[in-house]
Length: 148
Image 1: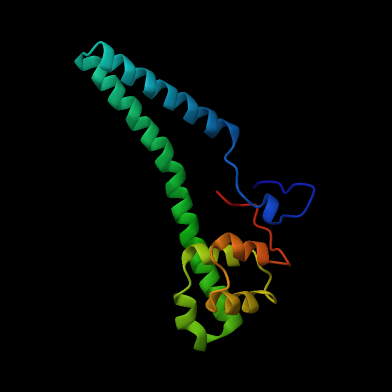
Image 2: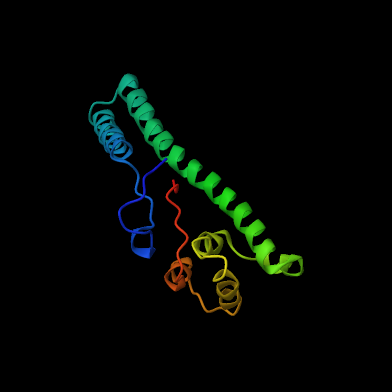
């Protein structure tokens, strides 16, 4: 479980930053793919072409692994927030809740329970142009240190 930093979470420090190993592995894989593609283009052989193809496939797998985790995380957030909003706003607002975009739900999830209904009302009035605007509007931040 990730440790929280010394100060509380807020808009300025809420983004998840991949660990150094993941970034280093990506740089190595990308550099290797570029090198192998260059080798295959300058001295073509079936072996060089296959080597470049495998290297490019590894870069795709590296990227897809993180993206897949983010997609699953967003699905969990969508479920979590729809249940939370239904609890706070009531069943009669279910259709309104269902229309909230996943990106907006991600922004809303950082708001405390007392603050959330007001932010949803402001969102439905079109007050927020993008999800980061929602996050900036949060005054009582609900930390989430488990972002992918």
